Image (cartoon, rainbow, N blue to C red; front, side):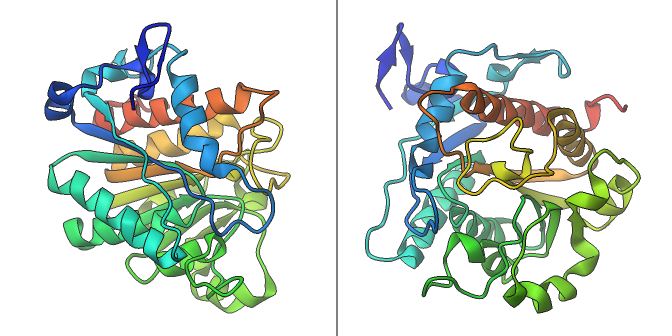
Length: 298
């Protein structure tokens, strides 16, 4: 990405993004501009650019980790362009992109885009890591077998993910009748928003249910609309900022994180605050992942 503004490269954090920077990077940010299966408002394809643009205008020092996230080595790849032939083709395109990152020994941070892109990343992680768990922060269960004629819909993202790894769901507060049987099968791994918001006693049980290796996927509608209105299908009663950070910090301290994604930002031209929240969330999670067991306990 070569767009420039105020002399900064169009990269996460405005960090240098040349060939040498790629070689030295430990982290690759992968923008995926796809919203081909959305069922309500389109525009999440613009999410990656909005997150990156916001990140160029925020501080990179993390006071909890005691260092700048740039110290970890971050390189921003070119956007993965939509595969127009089918959602399945897009899934495979994402798989190939994440496979290349993993094959180079780098850590994948994927920016969406709609939630269906997570499946491709999980497929690549399965090839690389074998057994691992997926931690999903989301308002919606996304467990439909298919939706609007495709099993690779955003509404089926976690159903497809279950073909490759167990899924622990946090913040769920919306599901459909057709997902009921799958919800019952996965009941021990679902932490409904109404039971956890404002509470901490569930965190230990959630951590215990995860494997040693964890891939994290964050649909931004997991957050309450009071702080994150810029999503396709907002739901009331979501997670707030510091409780979200506490969940992520706890997981990163206790488990090995093998990759993560942040998806479903639908930018609002008149309100940049959600873009900055998403960028800050990515920044905080990078810091948590690479600080790991050194993170302070509450």
